[in-house]
Length: 171
Image (tube, rainbow, N blue to C red; front, side):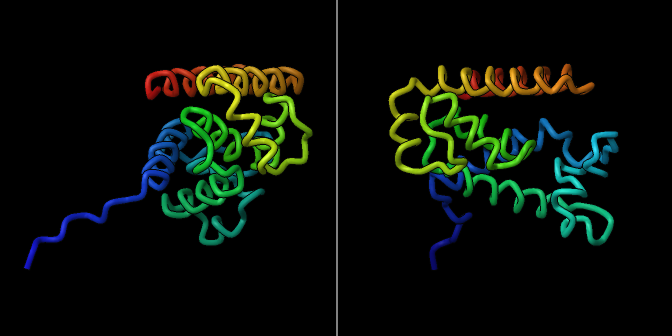
């Protein structure tokens, strides 16, 4: 019988995995972090406050982090967004919530903000050059961080700069 190799993944599944790896790289690959930001412990970017089920046994596995990323990918319709917009939006969704990421994309493309990426949003996205849109989304994200006046503002800027650098390299 013919040898069977690894299962070929659909292009959108491969893209999700590439984006997920990039986000996990930004999150420090499982390093346990405790910040005074009200979210509790964080591991692989999964916070105790917002994803308590993942913390039920006191730690988060990489599988649980990938599952959380996949839920955010589905919510922001990552499989229907062009690279590198998919990456910057997945990172925003995972870091700040999928609804905030969707609203940010809608603000960036100038459509009504309803926190849901549907036909109107996707049509507006299609009118943009993907790299320019990714940069616009990141600029908007940084302006939101700056307005918060968070003590973590510099860290957010570094994160988004690294994200844009990765997005540019992948484009």
